[in-house]
Image (tube, rainbow, N blue to C red; front, side, top):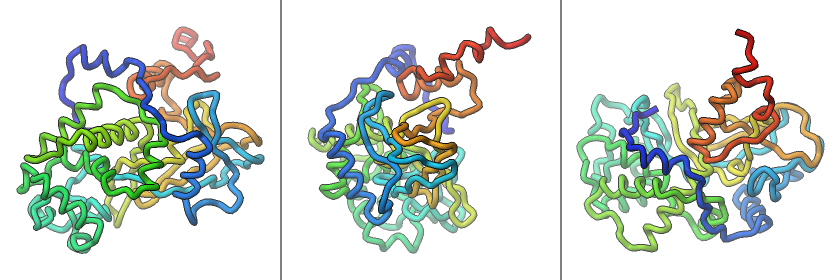
Length: 316
């Protein structure tokens, strides 16, 4: 993962405070309908799941029949996606198709129009890139001779400006936990451009998208043409999967922009379908620290409350 700037104690304290949830513009039923519309042809004719209020947290996904281990429950295309731009990744990766762009320098990979984005020759003329290219050139990137990691990191969020009305409704229907620390992401974005937007409605929309991302996003590691890519993606349905340290489902990614969720054990009808936000083999302490720092909650599942797995019960 990329190294982060050192933070003072006040910033660290803010990060682990309980989050304030932003207003959700849709009921659970309305959210389910928006998700069905978004899934389109990917929606199974008779889904083995439904969206409903969850006793774990907010909304969740529940089995509508007995599900066998190993069943594919659903697959979903991303609503918003973009490169993570970690230092461990090759930045000369196309921001659209994720192929490795030929050449030896950043200039070989950058769009010749001056938007500052690395784009392969095949994607430079696409309608999708033309929209992003025009917007970035309007904002006037400060760096046009090399790939700017900060500009790449915000691309997934900037793409919210190109969502259509149903997609925006879905975005506003998603849980978005607010935190003052997230405003730093807006500031980092502004530092990349001469004319970053200052209109309050645009900044509010941008900030809400950041909050939705930080609440629901997945990091996807995929291979495209033998080239490994790491992207950050927002999946409205998969984002509803609540956490359990002993989950009954798992996921993998296809092509960086599609998530596939499968059951890992038998799930009885009516049970909530869950996944783990932490590594399964981590200790209870490690999971608690990770979930508290990154997800801002303390897990109360059976595994976390089992005293026999705590360090003091280990045989020396």
